[in-house]
Image 1 (tube, rainbow over the protein chains, first blue to last red):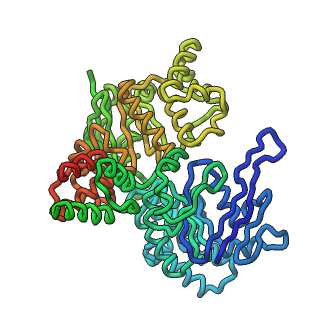
Image 2: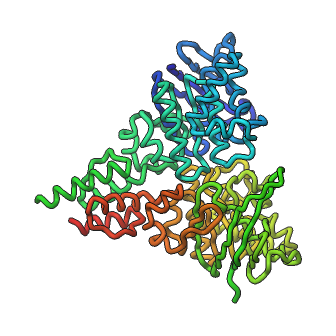
Image 3: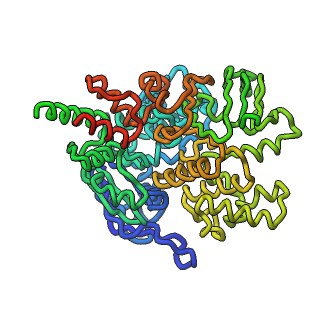
Length: 287
Length: 279
């Protein structure tokens, strides 16, 4: 499912002394099946932008075209859009409300008017995707679970809608390192299985570099970069000046370069760094 | 002089609605010396926050004793002495600010301690200065960034003149620059103001400058030592669901390939230095 955002501007409190331009002339095109990382400091406009994608906020001006349909048109039914664009908010576990894990995850599919069999299938699959044991947890209260499990139940509720576009706003904040890696893997598995379009908002440059096809960088309500991780993370100075950073490995490559140790500059992971350093050491020995 | 915090063989049980008990802390003994900078890491549910809440009498142990500056946390008569001595900063900055103007928020704590107005003025100015937020004194807190809000919350604690501050994942909700601001402030409080720091975090990079790292797992202390000692146990930490700083991870991978490197590399600078030796 493709997304095209054209000249999108959003103004908070227009005409009042508190008037603030939260988004200014945003133009983004996202292909069907792309995995996008959206980064920017707090207040850069990321959350405002993603709330436009399923009609939670109406633009002040501009268009949002999803699969050829401009969702800002008055005739468009927002419930149709929300079936296709699933939004996982920050700390989604705060929105759990049902008595059992099963009912909580089934809530969305039920509203789609699906058959009981189809709902059951979707709940099972969503729980399998986020690695929650179905038989053990289906009848438990979501409020008795651990923090990591609650987060997964909330994410499974959105997975069960089978959204063609999945938008996640910092899905791993507050999670410990292992749970963080597992949740990211689960999002990746879903993406690989259904080739859905994913937009991941994150403050972790390492996670973004590892996972996404394309990085979009926002600053003061504008898009300032859009490109592959390799293209975007070359811009260390600019990214730092707008309150972001680059992955740790990029800092290492840069620092080594100053000492005349030249590694490939487009590497981000520990694995890639290991290979590059080994290559360097071996070529050194041959000299 | 008594230890800043002295935790003697404590246990703590939670009870849920069904009257089932969960042992959240098992046989924990820790002492924190005045001026120390301690980082606590551990997986979600390992008991880190529960332990932290014992350090200023927000929770009382089911078994064992906790002393803060010599005061037993079970002694209700001294609970305010304890909280004035050991302040706490939490994860969500929005839940900690109470006033509509920054300096009023910072003044809230000392006002409740009954500090005279002239002295409050002085303390508020100093506290805002320490966290580099003086120019925002008359702003509304809700218009500030996450990192700025957290620094106001910290200023509110500093104005109570504590000897110790406990930080419970203060950077979890912040963007990279907010995180840098808060970490810089915490280090400054320790180095320049000589405040004892207990810092709980999921970001391993934030632990590399600590005097001591305590690793929790399932309600127990599983590792304790200097950052270099603790993080050299790469495999054990990964088993616990934790991580090591990326440079330590990289070092470990290179050592496995037969490269001669010390095991205790934590930062980019150290890695660069060591690799230059191999030239």
